[in-house]
Length: 423
Ligand SMILES: [Zn+2]
Image (tube, rainbow, N blue to C red):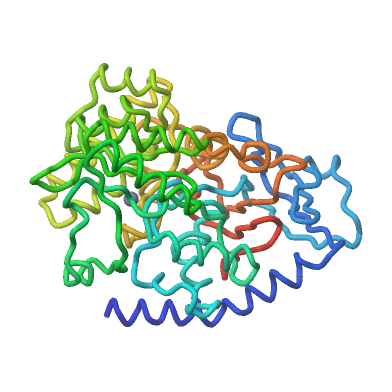
């Protein structure tokens, strides 16, 4: 039953995608034709009062003007999009995704329409215009990125760490296990000392990755960890080139080993370790790391366990985020989709809210905070004149109900409509 429904859904999406592509190219790509989003509530940034009944004017892929209807003059030749009753924000970042499911394998050979559908399913239908892939086959992900950037397929901006740097022995996984998990086969380096940390980071960065990702401590027992000297050597090489180091911490030991050895971005909370104490939070604050909480992932990871186990595990993660936010720590939105096959971010927004994050704080984790951390805050993350026209038009009002962040009417990247809801 589920398979049938899924097939029907995919068929419907497949059937409408060519139309979407045509609409996007006809309405937006035509030179000298401006696009005006008219009548919506515009959040120019998470911290400023929204503009009600506003206009966003887009020209040549950039935001030309933002203001009230009175303030912004719209040329008669402009294409109008009625956004009354809608909410407009900067395009969203998902700072923790993976292109490792079998569906992405041999990316060069996936028909453009199908690749576009897959990018919609996982990302653009949820307003995502930029992602950081934190672990995948480097060349395959680069192929997806290149096809998007060449204008062949509508999709988000992709940055990637390439394959994860693993502790020794952990990357050994059988073909049968991969088949069950639904993942592609590709090799990942293992590092067990400082020399290997330096050498493998060098190879990855030489190949053009946008950062590195370390799997400090594995999730399952028997745990072996990357030695601290190897973490330090790998992060030092990334920093020497102006690149960032991400780490999967798993527990308190992995968290402290990561932040004490130069890691910039912690890609999960650590429910395995119990609540975070002052030592952990102060160390994280001192090192100015940023946190991607991935709270929905915890329910997903223990989905086969008893209800009480699932709730306790997830609530530990929620408590850790609460602690981090209360201390003034920076959060980047990320869900681990692509590893997690349930792509809907709604539950993540709800759990972030439970952790005490307000709508403006969650919006910052989706827009200004990642733009800032990834060095793109002069082009992305705000709805402001001169910025790239990466925008989300939401059907409802997320300041009243945070779940509205996942109900998207249009997603635009550089002024092109890359997703349009069917109703
Ligand atoms: Zn991940």
